[in-house]
Length: 207
Ligand SMILES: [Zn+2]
Image 1 (tube, rainbow, N blue to C red):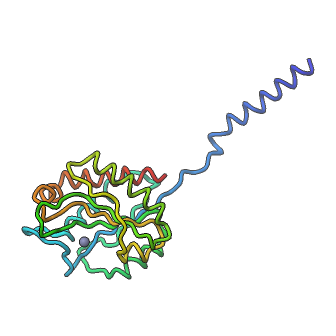
Image 2: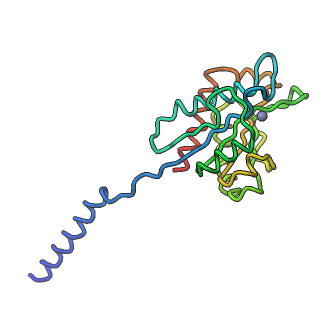
């Protein structure tokens, strides 16, 4: 009898803990991400056929923020209009926010019109290099899987925005404005929405 009682008591204790578990669960992790649309204002970046880099990356940055429906993902933009912001000011804005990730969006250009594809850069001088590398590899794989764009891979670079920020930072060159296929892709509203969705997909993996 005594043992049976002990067993029942033990079972009741275990059962009550099992019942309590959902309420004692940690609150979901909140992820803060900075989307840095490159260039702006007088700095147009790459321009081809009336299209400019500053506009393309601004539109995609806006779509990332607008389409984020996850309350545990907070997206900050370094610029919310067509204005020039110095790199050191962008880096200060980013470092003050202490984000989990910084994605600096750009588009490429080359005299060789055949050059095409997505290219991601990380800096060995950034203290969060290893974390950035993992995220960049994941984002690269998603971009290849979801889009009609080639990938030129994840590369090391010493860009100021990567070097001067202390959080995981990646520069994403979304394609070549000088290449016809990439240009028609990057300047298409529907494809820009898809690129934004792929970036949000990679961000949600950080949780
Ligand atoms: Zn650029």
